Length: 63
Image (tube, rainbow, N blue to C red; front, top):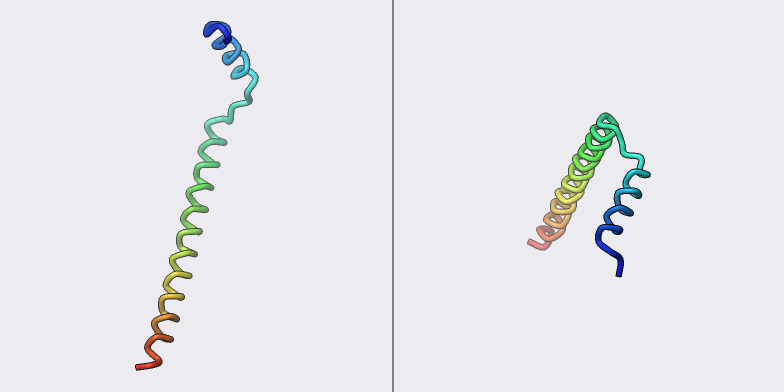
């Protein structure tokens, strides 16, 4: 078991080695993620509606 004080010192030392992204990089990445989520959601809505129409058409052929 490691002393909690030693553990916190090691965590702080490792965190100092991390290259953190700038505010601009974070905002750009966030914007790209949001844009990709919107594109993917529109794609899946279009596919879902297309399949709904096709299945509805096929099921109505027997009537």
